[in-house]
Image (cartoon, rainbow, N blue to C red; front, top):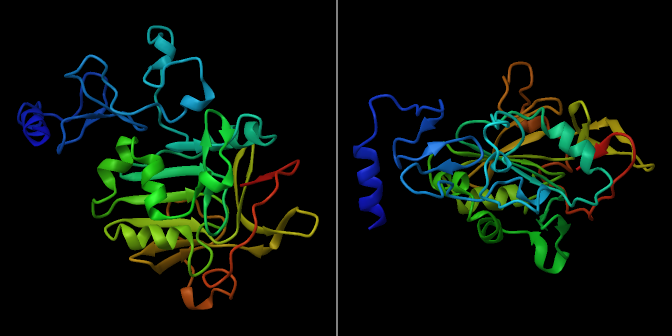
Length: 279
């Protein structure tokens, strides 16, 4: 039945893929793509998944658009990552949130901003950290369980050429990293993740670096964006590259990457610090 429904939608698509809102319709499903989620104009409720920023506005329905006030408010959704996972009481929340607005959304790319280390990302529900015993996104299966209601992930996870970007500390580090395991399970996609901490300020992304004993950004220990396919690192870019932007001048020869990045060991969960923040 679902296949027939999709067929009906796609057969009745207009000649041009843009709807009256200017958003592009997906040719395979007939749904309108609004950047963070998909919309079905044939049903009353419309949205096919919850707003990825729903945790920030617990008093509103997660299926709302512009706080139920689209006459006064607009939501162009051209910036911010697709998923923003930080507890509301996090001291660095405002810095992360303001910095995330400089991360542009990308077509065919699922971007997540979260606390993490080489073996897992930290899950957040209703604005609060979930205990590590149940809230560690530490496998491809758990990743899928957490994001299964996100239409962008569900439509892309088996599609060749689809990308996942983890703006989450150290999630590309080590032989058993979350990024490596995710790319092993979903072999059509590309997973991009950092080998060190990700640093943000309220002005945006700073770069990927280790940290000093005093927990300051260590520019003498730059990290790398590692690109995984089928469980292997197939490309690498330097610490100042922003995924989705031009790679010119940022390419790194994988063979020159020091030990402790690709073949490093898992690290403990990091702390939030004042000033520039790390993820």
